[in-house]
Length: 145
Image (cartoon, rainbow, N blue to C red; front, side):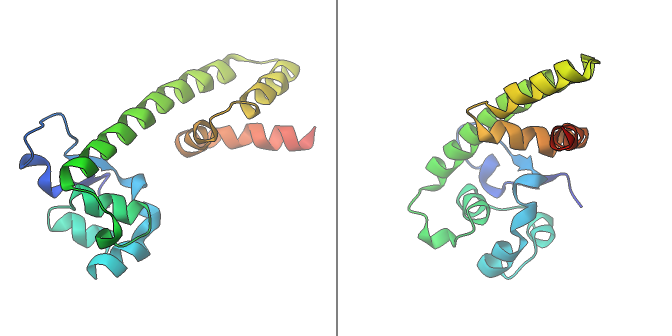
């Protein structure tokens, strides 16, 4: 399996800062939608060169691309914004995880976990779970307390 989903139109658009591919985990849970929209698996789509930005968003949103009232350029800008936000969240998640690893006192660990749970951005918690499998140990520790 490829680690990234390729974007077909990236080379055709004038804005060179737009991503030419996105992380595979953005689409990996949406195989059924890829099949419904294109009669192809995600691997098949990637093998033929990828998908357009509008097609990518439709797959990620579990809808048909024809239902999205977006131009390809607008869809590309949405993908770039999403990628930027996710990259920032990953950086914060990595910093948090490094801080958690530095804590050895179980009481401080429990306090830190309480702080993380109160964070307003639920997506940040999801990033922690997705990118740091060891983070689940904190959940187990909290449920034992």
